[in-house]
Length: 279
Image 1 (cartoon, rainbow, N blue to C red):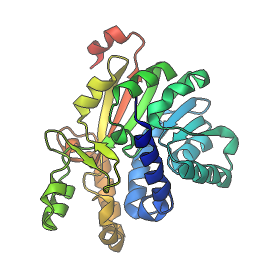
Image 2 (cartoon, rainbow, N blue to C red):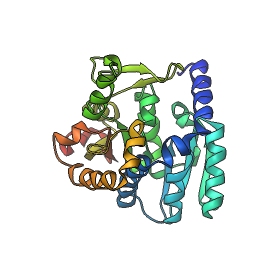
Image 3 (cartoon, one colour):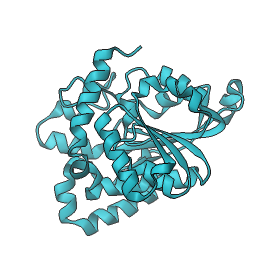
């Protein structure tokens, strides 16, 4: 069980982050290229009439996008302020009746059992990396998502050349290598939020046997990380060109492993004991 102090720290951190989330990421050029890539996957996976669970919904942009396409969404986040902003966004987009918002840590998804089953679930922008013990979350998701339902998860990549080069150039070798150490766990900006970077194979093993991985791609291979926004915005035409290159490179073996994020697509097993034959 996650300690209450850890949950309170997470709530406080993301409440604070919510106030500048639009200017720090969602409204940036790099942020928009990342979200467009995720929306392409969501649009290919989920459809009108489906009931979808969103984990760590943030300010609700993805939930509103799916709601506009005819899905109903239960959108959860640990931060009351994020949920407040998500509700405002849903009203502004004219889809509040299609989205149910919940202030709920990812570790407590089991409390939603009565609201299931869901046709699918998703987690965008590395929210699952802020969960120290992912196995209980996987078991809860297996109870919430119907057999045959789909799970889309965006998680941090392990080796990102852009990040290594950036921090090495600034003399910060600790940050440059933080994702590909033997045990890649670090604190998020010193606020007590543990970030756990898992490989694709680790994610696959953690969610097995209830979910099996059908495909994955990289996001942020050519486009640099969000902390390089100032340079990316100065050459917006180049950034857009790099985003198009990203789209072409996203599914390419080996190259996709050098992305800022791995976008994973799982299917809830009809018969968990037989999932190995699908990998």
